[in-house]
Length: 512
Image (cartoon, rainbow, N blue to C red; front, side, top):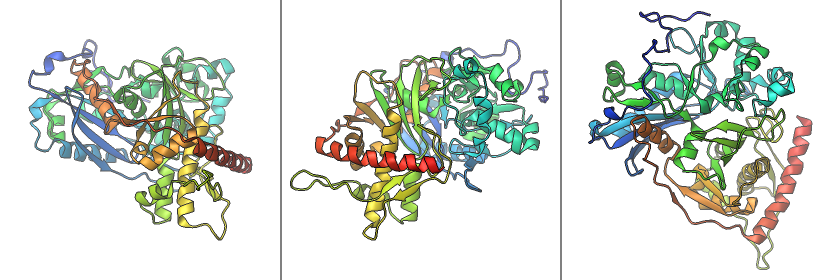
């Protein structure tokens, strides 16, 4: 597969010899420039923030788009919707702001978005996203690899990761695959519109099942072993490196100053850890569309059957246990039950009786709507309520849904190496409702500390913007909410409910 060359003969997406920009461009940041722009390209929308030199978010905006599911097991998005949403959110965030104050741009994006581009840098098809389960059959190619080779990937083999989805594309849509010349992640596509260059970074590369996490390079023996072409792999760089500066035409299209430095960027989870100033002493729980339990600071180990994921972050490696169905499942529940989020939150508490006992009857919920990763892969459309009776009402269904998501998190938490501090830092949408914070503390039996950084992931992206501009000293202003302690009687009750959840989950997996 060839590449369209530029006028100087250099392949599209690469700089000519000697043209690579330096890692820092301090001279591009004037003394008056006191804001960095952060762009967070999420699963269902883009968030944009402006972060000042003190690490405070001074402006924020967001713009949504849809995740398309033309048939069961599909989750995809047209990449140009990322561009449109980014421009709209940027326009709103920067309205009335003196743009000469901008120092740099940082960007992050959802992990595992599988995007294949043609010679002109255009997508050959919609991007396949992490909840997509179409590549279940293709994972057999990875499991057939020699143990020593598979172990260097340091990750469980699941269908929603980039490599299996790329192999699905080759098997199922060969004409589209044949047009492809470069693999890209979500943030790479958006960044390429600001500063041309089809690179990716180590955080997204490590999440592809095509990357040797132990050695820190593309695993070419894996790529060829599963029948893919190494020519599709992009150059990999560090997140805070300078991708380039915004040229005049891109500046006009985006409404930004020309000459503004742009970082390479990173995955959304890596940006969250950066923005939250996560500590290796404790685990971090991120509850959003999906949920991720994170253990920063671990070292990658070759393991052909790992219990959790191991990915590169910004300047570190972290372990992750992920569930696909958190806010994704709860949003579906609210929609089908015609409930608001406030209705859901109000349904969560189980009130102890006068003697302190807690009623543990009612339905259970398995949140496997889009399939699941851990601890055992589950195909899409395997979610269900169990234990329904004539007495079951909407409140009971809503409560069971929230508990089911938290129990799935608890099951995944057990997969990670133990942290020295049992306290869990909680961030994401799940940190906002006090009922959910208490449920997490009670059901996990651990103290929970809310991380009070609005739009923490976009703030992490903005920090990369500061670093691209030569200001590595800027950190997000992290504040913490009051620690939520687990209540012993509630923890005992949730232990019983968790055992019931596990029994229902095992029965469902056996039927899958």
